[in-house]
Image 1 (cartoon, rainbow, N blue to C red):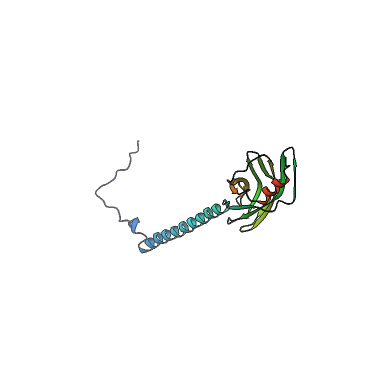
Image 2: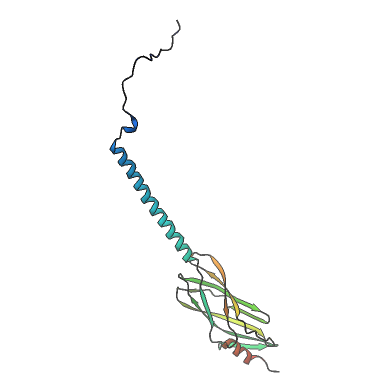
Length: 185
């Protein structure tokens, strides 16, 4: 004999169940508000931490150098119409974090300036001295425009950046010493 599915009597009422939306009453509202406040606090702290991290990364990447030629009396010489002068370049780190100057170079018609391949780390607001050698053709007429030095600098975020800084050669001890060394014809 086949079993028939049960029949639902629509005339009878089931016992009343409590409304699940109201089961918590005032306690449910408090829990929802507490969760909202905690979410706002955690979100606010998270945004603040991210902003601080972004600001620190920006500070770590700043390169602000000021360079000035200092005495060129160390060594110098001339041969075949060319002269060379060795001396120091004073470099001031005006940035907010220490930097490592990896190389300095400049080139213009008849002139080449390069460092001695030694890196120098300069703290923030500190000064460093970099040994350089300037070679030039004695027949070169030097322009009054500044010579742009190209610095290769490693910043606090460990990235290497290339920056330029103008330096006036006219009137500098480097150029005056070099001209004195040049053979007179």
